[in-house]
Image 1: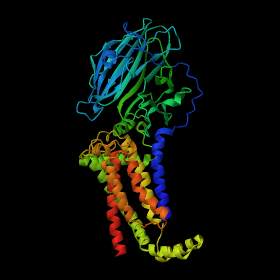
Image 2: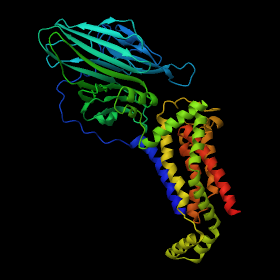
Image 3: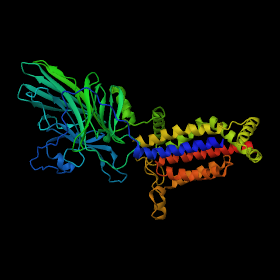
Image 4: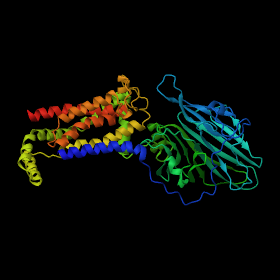
Length: 552
């Protein structure tokens, strides 16, 4: 029994250590690029040069950058911003429902930003031609605008005539959330057939915080029904290209997401790339569209630019038939647990109205589900504790370890004890722990969700730390909050209810475990620490009742 418990705790410690190590050292295997060559490439990101006063390498504020060209305002219940009509770029978006910090005067979260700002991040759509003599819209094309403001009720239409008999028309519409629909048409008023390629791109200069996360942050896509996650440093050596029918690709941050959604019925060539100025780009070039003389060619694509709201992504997956769109959220290895856990928490939150209480109720329900298994476990542990004196006698009697092992097993058999039974609930908790850890890290619904008292954000560590309480300069790793200390105490009490290891070395190691866990968990999301604390308390109550029953 003691060896099983020791193995379990060592597994937990190594698993927790793995989380920290993963944040700094883990990297995905490189993805093999497609061997196909894209004959018509989407244009690489380029700085817009329509402002005569701009000089190379100048950095503008978002407000000043927006003023450098005509633009159309965007406003929905979820978004506010604008797109520029010179070159047609959606390059100024703010998320109205989310604030950057917990401060009352905190600005909205900024998602897209124009070129020439500190961190450009924008999307564009257009047409390409293999025939250089055919003029197509470029980044400097000034479109004629029909419509004053882009809202869910009022789409905007852009028109441009190339002077060669081709009229380009682009209709932009947006729903009440974060999904733009881009319908591009070309009227061929010439006397010959014209072949054009639709394209879309998202370009950005990422903000590097110096911290890696267990949540994927980088380039992402579902191509040919397969999820591809590409870290920024994966592109240091070469670009990566794929062919796909339908699908989507874009950029993923912890809570925010942008994606080009391709025509589900057409073949497209896609690329993830990086240029010498450290601008990253995801783009696609659609299948060629041949427009007969006197006819119109049309292509429709979509752009998602907003928050990773899981239920919304699920809705788009079904309603818009976007392949595996929910995988924009990094559910991790335990997808089959992580996603249901989120929906359970979200349901409980809808009933209670506070995510902290929802987490506590979730912990209680989970203990209820595990009650029968835990009962058998604690009964086994109580019996083990009861026969500790007999085991000690055997250890004193037999110096031969093989003989001692045989006699110990005979004693277990005589007392009808299964020494491994006590570890089953503990091992069940490992995937549960990691799944809940993942949910608290990925679910935007938990970001900035308050509990009670000083806990204002369940996705962040406990802010009431030892340095705040004592005003002493405590090193970062040791600077933990009140909730982790309470959790450590519950672990200590729970440990005292278990059989004491007969080996002094093991006893010392077990005595340190609550302290080790306390400092390791002290830097995890407070919601996870609160869950673990209540789970321990419920275990203590159940275990004490069973110990009392078996010990008399």
